Length: 204
Image (cartoon, rainbow, N blue to C red; front, side):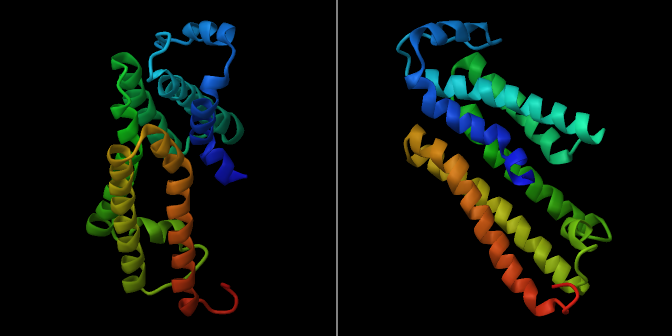
């Protein structure tokens, strides 16, 4: 359930993009009521502009619902909201999808920098702070695990840029949801297999 909630804006972005061409003309005409969304009849960028506006609204709703339920904010949601508002807003203002296409890369690289900074400048790397209540590992293994996450974020950001510039917009939209999610799941499964050698029966 939490995974679905975290992916909520991305799922709505994907759905809005896929469904735009199937919307009745009267509904499309009413979309101009969404702030900063200007759709020019027949313009090829209309679908991604609409999807971007939906993603911005979904991110605002996501942060609001999380705060309403938990009375606090989650860092990942705030980072995502800030970037989707800035880059998505630029996409709507300049009618240029390039800005929103950079958003997954910027998110991944920011998290990669956070993991790197935690390893260089703090006593415990971020991955240890996140997982130490569930598993006990030697310091060298925590550092190795943290380094793996840094590489993962770097590679994910590069993969997003490659798909964004080497393939069509429709392919990138699919990759943004299914490709990035697939890469993350493969990495997490690989990490789980790696950690099994360090688990005792109680931790398993």
